[in-house]
Length: 94
Image (cartoon, rainbow, N blue to C red; front, side, top):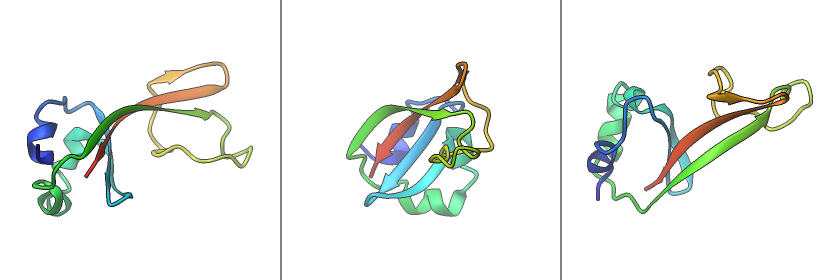
């Protein structure tokens, strides 16, 4: 299945992380993938090798504690706990 065929199964509000040859090529909402037309045109016919739903859990004070930053540090988390925040990314491997 190609990336173009696969993303038709998802919703525009789903967060994606697309990796090609182990390099991150896109992180964000599906709707934004189509706004990056040149990049999408380059990868749209690539075969999807693997798909996973991966939660990202980070400490709210990641910057102050010098911890690993979230994939999208400027975005609001989907869930927040007393000292953690969580986002769910559909990770697509090309």
